[in-house]
Amino acid sequence: MCDLVCASPQILQEHVDLHLEECSFSEGINVGDLELARQLQDEEDRQQRLEEVKKEKEEFKKLQRQYGLDDSGGYKQQFLKNMEREVNRGRMQPFEYHKRKTDMMESLAFGVDDGKTKASGVIEALCKYYQNEFKDVRRIRLSVGVDHFSSSLGDRGWGCGYRNFQMLLSSLLKNDMYNDCLQDHTLIPSIPKIQSMIEDAWKEGFDPRGASHFNNRLRGTKAWIGACEIYSLLTSLRLKCQVIDFHKPTGPMGTHPRLFEWVLSYYSRGREDGAKVVCTSKPPLYLQHQGHSRTVVGIEEKKNRTLCLLIFDPGCPSQEMQKLLRHNSDVTFPKQLRKFVGSLKDKQYQIVAVDGVLLPEEKAARREASQVFTAEKIP
Image 1 (cartoon, rainbow, N blue to C red):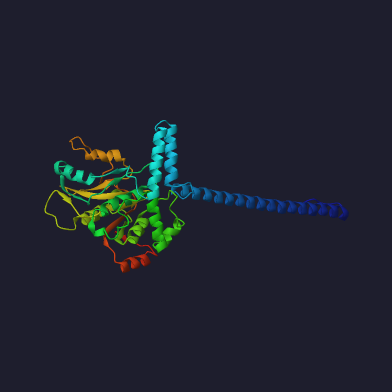
Image 2 (image 1 turned 135 degrees about the vertical axis):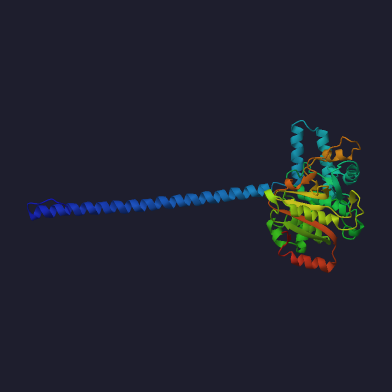
């Protein structure tokens, strides 16, 4: 135990006993420290788990707010709240507030859009504009007439999908081929009405997984919708459509030239007489990417073979679109209207294209197929 030399056995015994007591005391201290360390570690782990759970809940609530699923109300509530804010800031008179509130309530009661953000005749104006301008354009192909619908006080920040459906429907209503499918929807529906129409498609059995994501409810929310919901709604109306998924870039710098080529092919089907401006019989295309959607209404093919999409963006104010209706030479295109290959660099894009009418049995088959939703992938 030590190097001490003791004078007698008694002294040696006492010294050894002291050493043994000291060892026992030290071991007790070590055991106590180990237990304390374990307790501290357990407490730290518990606090970390609580923090993770709290963070997950906060992130979930953030996502719910972002995608309009936080029970904060829908179109009507946002419309009234934004108008009240305009009155408080002196940008709207009280009498105008009450008039617009009455108009909005009437529009919702009938399920018909009030048309206050609509710009009609833009496609026709583009036809005339391209005849005289853009000398570097070899050919421009345009959809059947499309009305532009921009976001309003009631849906700003989340309503792009619904507005693009309104644009698509405005074009389909101009084509006699779709009269039978759309006989109950000859007027452009309001956003809450479109939400109800999608809910009805879910009740029929379309896209159950997508429906569960929204808890089978859209009306009364500010929920964002995308290509799957548009497909389900159109198919429930017996409109033949497909979803094309450009799931990764196909060009340098994260671009999607294959998307542009697909759109060119879509608008090029049919007879062309060599005219510079080709007004096709094609409906516009619903174009979706992360966080936003727009409507493709045509495509430019330049003399050097580069391509440019013509796009109606719900985020573009109707006043800007109305400028195109002026018949003078100083008209300039809204910057949102023309998109070159280098302008579309999101990771993924989806297109919903309408091309015909479904027989009842074809609709049933597509409803069954939507139990596991799939899209045509390019590439």
